Every structure is written in structure tokens, then in C-alpha cells.
Length: 405
Image (cartoon, rainbow, N blue to C red):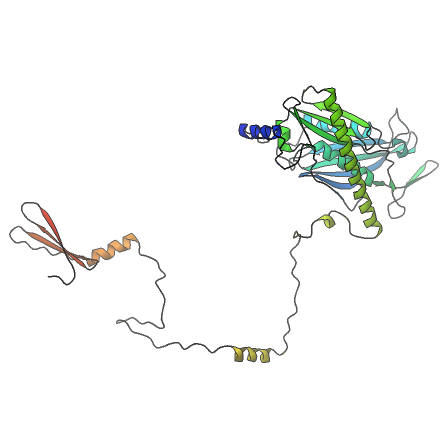
């Protein structure tokens, strides 16, 4: 299933708003959406929310044989999945071009930039090394997947702890988390991607484009940078020609945004570390707002059954006596009776068919043949209608009021 395309009116409206430096969500040109980072109960599990775009990151590790050309280095693997749960535009099965492009960009941003010390993942040279796998799942798609995925990946790697190991001769012992404290990864820096969307062949640009803005953009520029303003990777897509001044301006903006996001990640890690150390509440369930109902639970209130009779007598004494009701039936006609005042007719008005039947029953036609004159009398609504016809075929209607002769 493919996503529903934008209409010409929507496209023209978005482009007109961008040309006037306005965005649908009220942000300014260089503003990011709200970023929320939440860690799970296990190490290496986190959810990043960039506006309504949500990415789940999970880090795992295992002991494997190293590569032949790098016997003393560990292995770092990234996998980003776009499922139909995030958007109907993503179809299961063979990876699309978008998935391949995003995975390659993540590998260049995090693995090729040497942000993690892979030599520290070596257990036995040429025999066993740690393979760290980062699985990213897009839970909801609302634009700018690569930025949210890069934040989730680096946050999960910083939060992850691998089991401690010991080597005695050729024997390798892996200790569970209950016996020894897990060991964090050695991370040198934190590269983060910042996306810039260009419109009208580079005339206008926006930071952190939304899903609708991505549909009408002409090109996209992604800059991966750390807080030291070191560019880790840069990628341009869409076939637009950018000037040197535009790239330099984007790099300066990216440096500011990366510093803010890095501080936010470090603050989230520090809060999680304090909660675990002090024995407080942590995890996804604890991060839910208290205003939302997550379970239906009714507390039982004990009922006091003492002195029920005395309380009932007090209530009866304080209550007002019942009003007098005429219980004698009123006979209006033979075979009928009425008790009390009664109420109005609740059956509604009669239908047309019933009214016609009643009208037919009330009609009385009297035919008198005398000197070729026929007279008919009908009684309707307390009025007498007399129809007289003669040989001249002229009709005359005379309406007599009740009581008239």
C-alpha cells in the first residue's frame, strides 16, 4: 500500500506558507520539534520521540569470531526497520531504497566516524570479540527519520552495558549481571544527524522537516556532527545545486543543534543513572503521564452496617408525609374509569391512514332523488357541508355553522 499523495491545493498551500516563513506546526525556520528520550528497564533500550516521530532502539551483544583483516577489533552492526505499523507507505518484504539509504547513512555516521572504541570489544585476539548490534524500529512516521534514528542509536549505545568477562588461558568466562557489574562501552564522541530541507531550488530551507514538508521539498542535506563541531559525514540528496555559503551556514546551524541535543542526551542518562542508584522508579511504564488511565481499578469502600434500624427510623421521621391522593375511580362513561389526575396522551398523533378511517366512519351520505336534485350531507370538524347539484351541472357549496338552520 502506498501513501496517499498530496493534492495540488495542499502542495501550493505548503509552498506558499514556506515562502512566507511560516510552518504548519507554528515553528520557526531553525526550530526543532520537542525531543523526549526514555530508557527501558534493561540496559541499551530507549525510545526517542521527535515530535510525533517515534523510534525504538535496542542494543545487544554476543561473542563471535573477528574479521580476518581486523583480528583485534570488535564488530558494530546497525539495522533500521520501517514497518507498516509506522506508516501505510512502508510495505513488508524486500527493503526499499529508503531503508538502504538510511542504513548506509547510519553506518557512516556512527561506525565509520569511530565514535566507539572497537578495540576495547576484543576478548581474545583472532579468537573472540564482542559483536554489538543496534536494532532500530520506527514506531510512528511523522518526518525526519534519520535524525530520530541517530539520536536513538547513540543514546542506546551510551546506555548499554555488556557483561564482564575473564580470560584464563584459552578459557573465557562470561559473568551474568547478578554476579558482576556490567561494563559500559567506550564512546569517544556522540555524532548526531541534522537534516535541512530545501525548497524552490535552494531558495528556502527548513530544519527538522515534517512528513508533509518532506513531500514538497526539492532536496535534503544531512550533516552528522558532534559537539566539538567535527563533521562526521555529510550527504545531499534530491539533485539540487548548493552554494558554498549555504553549506557553511547549515554547518553552523548544525553545530548549535548538536550541542543542545547532546546535552539533552547526557541529562537523560544522568537522570536514569540516579534513579537506578537510588532505587527509584525507572522504565517505560514510569514515564507515562499520571493523567492517563492505564488500568481500571476500583477501591472497595467498607460499608458500616451498625445501627441500621435506628438510622432508618431517623430518616423516616425526618421525611415529609406523602401527599393525599384521590384513590376513588372516576367513571367518565360506561365501561371506563380514571384514577388520579392522569397525564396527556403519550401515543402521539394518529397516522394519516387512521385519520382517514375515522373520517370515513363519521361520514353520512343521504341521497334524495326528487326532481333530478341530489343532496349530500357530510359532517366534518363540527361543520355541515351541503352539496346541491341540478340539471345545469352547476355545483354550489353551502357551509352551515353549528346551530344554523
